[in-house]
Image (cartoon, rainbow, N blue to C red; front, side, top):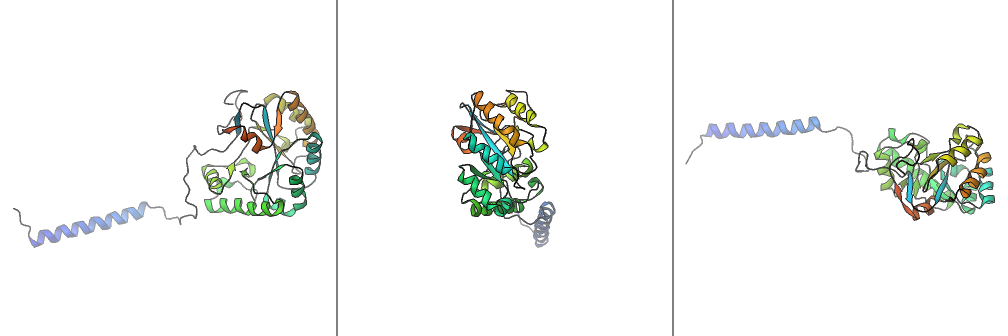
Length: 263
């Protein structure tokens, strides 16, 4: 049996206290000093991808239109869709829908699908979870009030996203949608270019990006031919919800790859 002197016990207790203090100090040193955000979301770092297209055996594609400003382009686009008996998905910025509720209601009355393009048209990957959520929910309230519809799809402004944007949107009930085929209508390259671009690159399950904002000054010239060519080539233009009902989300980004690869 071993007996410890009072001096030995005291030294041992002092050593334990010093170790505990040092451990707490080191933990504090390496603990981030940022205030915790309201949304504690898992970030998958590359795994939490948005939807770019739909994996489907049906010969369907979704026509999608973003609107954030102006009223000159949307009218002709709606007229063409009505004439061609095509239903599309409109990603509306909340502030635009609030300002132009009469046009937003016409989009609904014509049978089109309402989706969210967020509120302030900024790159959300530069922001934290609280600001991302505020952007999405501000638009959500404005879109519900203006259209009477509850959107289920969210396209971040400029198509800019990271894991946190996708995770935050999903936490708020939204599926984040980018696109697989860009008509480049926002660059106004000429209707023939847009028509040819779609015809040469379209595939089953494609999500086609167009704009009904005033920055797109030529889409109404290309749109009738894009629709006619899609039908001539055996594709049915549908809303995003209809497209997804016949398949599963494609979360690998096929943009910029050779035709047919990864699709």
